[in-house]
Length: 65
Image (cartoon, rainbow, N blue to C red):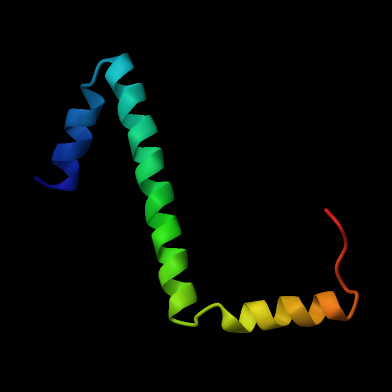
């Protein structure tokens, strides 16, 4: 099955099933994003950003949300 096949099947879903699928897919994408962030943290890919944020905080260059 390819993307076009999947698109075709999704387009034919009744509204209630489309909403169910949309909710599932949103959760799927969120979890995939979380997994990628965790992998990047473990690999040290975000270390430079963390160091920059810490430097800005210590220099008083941040403001409360």
